[in-house]
Length: 254
Length: 349
Image (cartoon, rainbow over all chains, first blue to last red; front, top):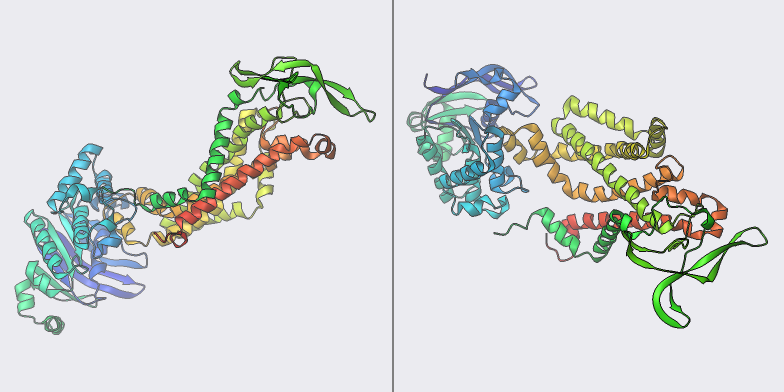
């Protein structure tokens, strides 16, 4: 089975109103799959459902989320915690608020390692520096000891990727990872995601920027008001949109 | 690498620039230092009594003997009674007792039968100066220990209630309210009544600490819970969750440290209220028991009008309670200002 993550008939509702309705898609190993759609289409809700971290008002009504052969919705809360960070990482849109202002970048990456591994303090320190080198942060030693506000936006987003990637997860959910960055930095972060993909990490990219999606994603799912309206290889969906909403989206982008 | 720019470091730097705050801080440091070295600085043990010197007034140190400066000494005293049968201590210039320094492991002392009462004696002829510093050990440590326990309880329970919310929150907050609905002093008396009367001094000390801790944690827990409710919605808490950081680590590392600007000043203010509470318990005879001194039970000697009129120095422990409480309040206030970015004089945040 080449699907790393397989979502079947996922329905998420607040009260009786479905925010995500009967959504099914697969994320194959080593591929970048993008979810695109307007605001409120349920993109982020799907991302948080995979980690089972939905706000308490939202409930998963039905469906299954099969990751590495097991249904995440059936796991105990402790084994779910062990999945998070270690097997599934998440990158957020706004890296400044994603870091705790009271701790250094190094301390926060170290915390993830401490939660999932038995490594000693020295081994963790070395590993954190390695990961900071790997995401191409200039001067990793300094970044290790810096507080979040001392880094630039691009550096913070790299540190954010390091945070999600440090335990070597097989899936990274990237929720609008470039939206808060300027265009040149967006390209750099996209290149970083492509490098991760080459290391056989699957990426579920949540984005509204079709340009970025057509640049790096292999497959795309177009979501409108909680429904999948179109899915398939990027070239096919964006190059030759069939559904009205997709056409509208592509038209708006051009 | 510039590391000293965390919020806490900035706040303490601002605190160090506050002269009154620093003065209060150093007064407290001196008090605690003297309490720790009470064995050394006081001339007598706290239970060393001489009934011939009941309510003996403060002894003055003499330097001039027959018109010549020399080694400091004290005159002896003879007990007489006036026409009203009141004690009058007459200075007996024929008896001289030189002051010995660093003798028998004490900073200063005189040979028996001379007695040296720097700040006077109590009803049983015990040295008030010595008893104040031995009492400081009890009074100053009880506040700190009580606060340490109630802060651990308050932070943990408030943090857990706010972070999890839901029924956990409801149960814990109802528990808090049960403690808060009883007026503090009556709760203290009730808890003290529940302690067996045949406890030894250490057990009484521990039970007073526990009683103090139990009356203070609830209000702190409620405020921390409110802050945790808002902090758990912050992005970095969600990020920590997505990375599989255990809940208790998130509470301890990402929720509670954010409340430091509130909890650090409150900690100081609570210490002062606990020192007062211990004094209150001991004044009414429910706290630390004689002969072990605490500032509270030393002050209970001053409950009658007669001793206060004829031996006003036995009010001195009250002055020390006042100074210690005020210093803790000033330090607490200064810390609150230091943590408040709107309050910094130079506008640096």
